[in-house]
Each structure stands twice: as C-alpha cells, then as structure tokens.
Length: 130
Ligand SMILES: *[C@@H]1O[C@H](CO)[C@@H](O)[C@H](O)[C@H]1NC(C)=O
Ligand SMILES: *[C@@H]1O[C@H](CO)[C@@H](O)[C@H](O)[C@H]1NC(C)=O
Image (cartoon, rainbow, N blue to C red):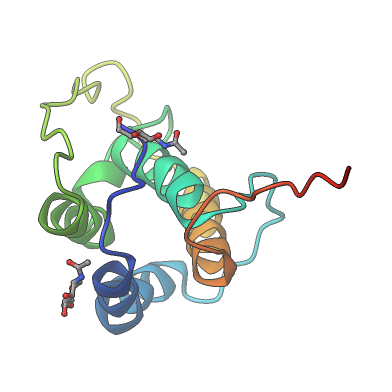
C-alpha cells in the first residue's frame, strides 16, 4: 500500500486539529535530533504509518497512544483500500518502557508530519530537457 489515493485535505485537517495536539502534548517540549525525512505526502504517510503503528523495543506502548489511534483512524477513514491488518503485538518481548525512547520516537513522528505538511501531494517528477 503506497498511500497515493488518500484524501490529503482531510488528513491535513485531522492532523492540524487533533493529532498535532496529541503529539506535542506527549512531547512536552522535548527535543531530539531527527534522522528520517520524507519528500511527498504519500511517502510521508508511509513513514508516519511505519513509525507510529509498529511498537519498538523500549516503547511497546507507542501504537496504543492517543495520537497513534487517531492516526490509524485517519488512515482507515481517508485512504481508500488502506489495509486494516492486525499487527503483531510485540509487547511481551519488549515490556520495558523507557520514557526517553518513547519521546525520541514521538519526536521523529512529529518531524515526519511536519514534512508531510510541507510536501507536494505527488511524487516529484523530473523534467527532462532534450
Ligand atoms: C501506488 O499504487 C497504485 C495502485 O496500486 C498505483 O497505480 C500507483 O502507480 C502507485 N504510485 C506510486 C507512486 O508508486
Ligand atoms: C476529501 O475530503 C473532504 C472532506 O474533508 C471532501 O470535501 C472532499 O470532497 C474529499 N476529496 C476527495 C477527492 O474525495
């Protein structure tokens, strides 16, 4: 699934009105250096989805956080054909929650949303001059 069919207008609205506030509320001003970036709205959603809905070692609760639930809802509602698959729940093996790891990942996700807002809807077309 490549997110090219999503209603970006709706997702932008949900991000601005809801998800942004959830994310910044969780972060409480914590700042981390970010590595991952993205260059088009579909590419950004692909990464946002991956980072948001997969639990990571040190932060198994991530996909259960409010911003994550609302992100999943937004994708389900505004990306036709978005696969609503059950995810492997790795909370048994990564039960230990480390506050800083959750914040780091949340900060990365906020950064990707920022890029989403700045990005064009289509993938970049290269102009060939002959
Ligand atoms: C995304 O997937 C659709 C349908 O599978 C396809 O038609 C389209 O070319 C893909 N877009 C990109 C940018 O890969
Ligand atoms: C996207 O959603 C908005 C409502 O938020 C709606 O007005 C618009 O028609 C939708 N666009 C498409 C292409 O479905």
